[in-house]
Every structure is written in structure tokens, then in C-alpha cells.
Image 1 (cartoon, one colour):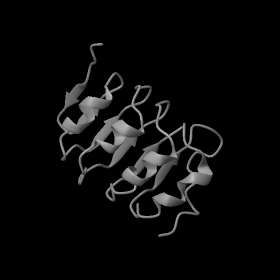
Image 2 (cartoon, one colour):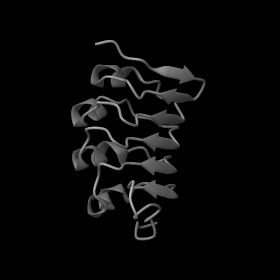
Image 3 (tube, helix red, strand yellow):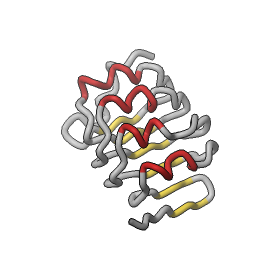
Length: 117
């Protein structure tokens, strides 16, 4: 299966990215869009430490709450879309002190006030 990854300076549109390709994401990327990609928890665990990431979209992927441990290490993250994760699982993201936008893809959009700061 061929995949497609559109790379523009600090942004990667990886809506067709494969799990194996996640380990080659540049560590200084600022924005990642994986919406609808068939990536899993195993793939997310292959991501390098993203020390500059500000925006991450993992909506409509195959990841579960298990991936929140990896996402929680991206402490520069400001915006996060994750429609496939339940809001009651999000407490593990309390390390994301810069997070100011969180979208669960339903009525809980921006339901971020309860995260510890």
C-alpha cells in the first residue's frame, strides 16, 4: 500500500500515513494532521519526541486512550483534535500546560477547563 505525506516547512499533512512512517517524522515539526489516517497505538508509540509540536490532529484514526501517554509527552502542544478518545480518558494529558484547545469531535469541544494548570 502506497501512502502519501505532504510536508510543508513546519506542517505535515499525513492523512494517508502508515504506522511505519511515523518514526521518520522530523522532531522539529510544529503541526501534524493525521485525521482519518489508519494509524494505531503502535504507530503513535513510534513517533519521536516532538519538542516543537503545537498542533496535533489524530481524529478518526485507530488510536485509543493508550496513545495518550505518548501525546502527554508533547508538552509544547497547544491544540489537539482527537474524536476517537473519550473525554473521561483525557486526565492523563495534565502535563500539557500549554494546551488551550481540545476537540473531542462532539459537544465536548474545548472542554478543557478541568485540566490542571
